[in-house]
Image (cartoon, rainbow over all chains, first blue to last red; front, side, top):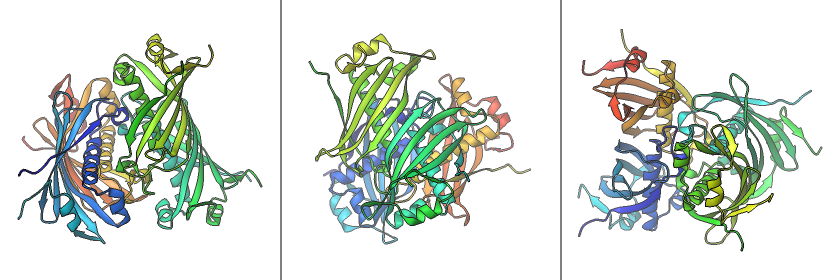
Amino acid sequence: MSTQIFENKMKVRDYECDGQGVVNNANYLHYFEHTRHEFMESCGIRLRDLTAENILPVVRRASLKYKNSLRGSEEFICTARIERKGLRYLFHQQIRRIPDNTLCAEGVIEVVCVIGGKVNAPAMFDKAFADYIVWLDK
Amino acid sequence: MSTQIFENKMKVRDYECDGQGVVNNANYLHYFEHTRHEFMESCGIRLRDLTAENILPVVRRASLKYKNSLRGSEEFICTARIERKGLRYLFHQQIRRIPDNTLCAEGVIEVVCVIGGKVNAPAMFDKAFADYIVWLDK
Amino acid sequence: MSTQIFENKMKVRDYECDGQGVVNNANYLHYFEHTRHEFMESCGIRLRDLTAENILPVVRRASLKYKNSLRGSEEFICTARIERKGLRYLFHQQIRRIPDNTLCAEGVIEVVCVIGGKVNAPAMFDKAFADYIVWLDK
Amino acid sequence: MSTQIFENKMKVRDYECDGQGVVNNANYLHYFEHTRHEFMESCGIRLRDLTAENILPVVRRASLKYKNSLRGSEEFICTARIERKGLRYLFHQQIRRIPDNTLCAEGVIEVVCVIGGKVNAPAMFDKAFADYIVWLDK
């Protein structure tokens, strides 16, 4: 049985473009983050509930490749494929423009979970994300 | 003795401009807010300390006039003149471009302070802001 | 026949919240703007095409009331009701949280259209927005 | 003679923090970009003049490591050290908190310059950045 890839449909908002008329490079991290949080929510976990319990998902590394610029009002699919390596969650994410499926950006976002000041991987995450996670060191 | 006006020198960052090549309208609220927080800090009060104590300054109303557009890399002075009316703080704010002193935007931002879920005006604010506040109903 | 109100369903993205755990005041202007651009697009007019033709919708004034804070991942409806007064378009906009219909923010955003450096009201706008505009001075 | 490192002093604005109370991960790309543009400007090149001439610096890759979170109102130095490899400019950037010099984030941002749709390295850049660039393949 293969693991699933999460897909989130989004649309460029004009204020996300900068003076060059294309989406500013930093906003792709926003798109990726929002998609990760939509993924979590689809699994029953909401970020602000985690924050209230002092469980803090934290980005440790991000590696981004910008391929083709998104422009105002364009629609796109932002995806997330998830690997678990030690205590780290590796989100392999892509942004593909609709309707031509052009790859606009891709990245690997490494996230750890800080609980009470220490990096940990909550059992509830493994359960909630079971259909999506590929375990790299099992 | 006249009351003081707080001045904060800032500079447009290119990512704050949108596809029209000028600063996006929402960012003026960011400039105004940052200047209010710089004002507070100059009086010895830091926002994140307030947040930690659950004292929450909250914007209730904002009235903005956009006069002339700011463009990438332009420097400007953002000012704040403060009135107190009942439990409300009224920040009269302007943004003037350097070096020609052109008025780019002005606004009145009405802020109240929510403490434990209730609107209140902490005595420490009156003391800290004493040199700046004009009392409208005294 | 009554004029129409445009409705745009949106959802808070967690990065739009600030350290107080609620949507930052400036982002409501982003929500309002995105909804106006979605409205225009539903009428066949796309902002970046206007920009390419040097037709620049510009915000002149904004008057905002903040009623109830939006928090991370909450869904809401952002509306726009449009009046035309002289060369000005007045967008009466509201943000209502789903599912309880709580009014979170409302505002009046005054927009003019700058063409070749002069304020003008393009005939194509009147035609495109015909089902929505209430003429105040006819 | 050693090459220079560009330094840009900045300060966290409270709206740059998210619901976790720390600067959101995407904003570090904003800090890095603003510092690159300040660097260019210190060398006599302003981004919006480039845009007007259709010379478009474009981010191709970004590799980021997040070490320690910045919080509201903290001051920091953002640096840039520049390498030239083929037609690519590699900006090695760091963010260090003041006053303790803690490394908060570091990244390598790969930028190319698109002129008339083609990647090129303008001679004026080499001249303007002469004191800063380390040539990797000369």
